[in-house]
Image: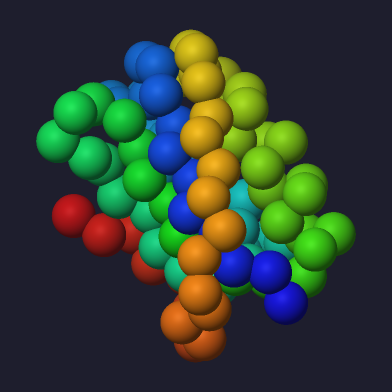
Length: 89
């Protein structure tokens, strides 16, 4: 299991990034959450297999169709053993 924090920077709010992140996470079996940050970025906590996390991070570098991702910042974090993936407000 791998646990990461992902900060996605760019035009990533108001383009269905959170909903699309939810759908991608569910499809890869990833647990955690996604939320908009006050600075305009999107913050994600994700836990899953190394393979699923690699695929998820690759997806985050592009995101949904209308997103314009400028940067993705990754940080390894302690596992929280999430039971599902949620969109937080």
